[in-house]
Length: 344
Ligand SMILES: Cc1cc2nc3c(=O)[nH]c(=O)nc-3n(C[C@H](O)[C@H](O)[C@H](O)COP(=O)(O)O)c2cc1C
Image (cartoon, rainbow, N blue to C red):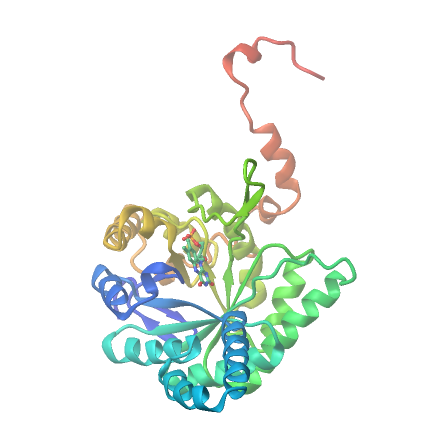
């Protein structure tokens, strides 16, 4: 056991630095380079059920057309059989990653139907993944659906997947729930072994000239870590001994990893920083984390974990509402404003 050894989803990891789902975890070649740079585990990009469903629709349409002309259909079927589907490619990729990597491979799934989530979870287990992350990414745009119904659906997904697989299960959620602490506890009770805080929503842009909606991915900035930090601190005592926690969003340096661990994360995940600085940035982050531990006289990451969480903090209110006032008052106006008379 080394100074950085960590447990996440029941897996023993060399360090708390995990490469989250993104372009660099897509192929075995790229994942190998992440491993060389020091990733202690990788999360593969999500298998999207809607993509699989769209492909199946196109296939059935093609078969329907083919069946209208028998001679043509005879030529058509062997060619179709040879085409690998998105789901098959994904599962083959899971198996190949497992064969070629020494570090744990966490697959990721984004489903649309409760049955779909459960079915593919079973397939991913068969393919040999070490764990599964459920990517619960949805925009609650239906005015007929209540917050409680949205949450219940997520809980039901976790319950169904829990029944369908024995794989360790992480659930990646967004911060956009009205009662996040309650929802997080319900997800754990439904069978989540870990929570990943948080998924980032990608806001589409509008091209004013063409009037088209343009999908835009912007990489995160380090300040975005503050939202996960608050919720990690609040959820740490609620999840202790029942589920582990991962920080995701804005983790860009070794000091960011230390901050995430201080408030109670078991691992810190990163994507944007690697896309910005290259896969080798993982090695830099590990060196920075070690330097931080030395400078602050912690021997292992275990010692610092959770020491600033909501339960352990001298000032738990710092994570809650009282902090609001302090934050607003903490803003120092630029010089030209400081000469104005103070409001009472
Ligand atoms: C180009 C790109 C692709 C991504 N693909 C996925 C994905 O397939 N599944 C998923 O759960 N998250 C995906 N993410 C989100 C990341 O895993 C991560 O949660 C998010 O970028 C926040 O972390 P960061 O601040 O370190 O980038 C993607 C992010 C980027 C930038």
